[in-house]
Image (cartoon, rainbow, N blue to C red):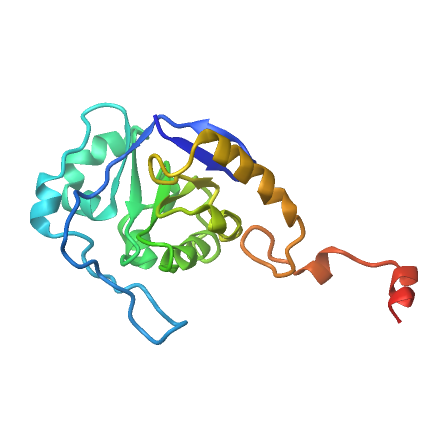
Length: 212
């Protein structure tokens, strides 16, 4: 079973099985727009023939691609209703499309994919889900989940991180948990705490006078 890192610092052995797309040399849909303003494209995350042939474990709790759910919904609906089937969204897919296709409150778990470290579209998708669309269920970061970005992922609304299998040892994850406490008071507001530091911490008049 895969091990995840939770926002509360726990390392948890999960009973969910992630169903990925098969390896492919085909180019992935990319972000569009000017640098710093990249957006999701809404393109299909996988060809129809891949979705038709993608194997889903017959038992257990599974996290399947959102595009697969759209294509084979009739086949998978009973498992979804039972809470044994969750969804993951590719970086090129828009959160609005997910919101329009399914009741977010009924989804037992959502996961967002980071195709590579330099692709930050999932950060924006996480912030939209938590902020604009008020999703309050489990939100996982999957794909190229790197230790340098763990704190940023939690700040954007993820509560669970699933690095690729074999990427980190348990000792490295434990060390990563310890490092999360190095900066307990971030200056900017974010999804995890919308208030900036100056609204969260008030200095005493004596401390302010010392700074003069």
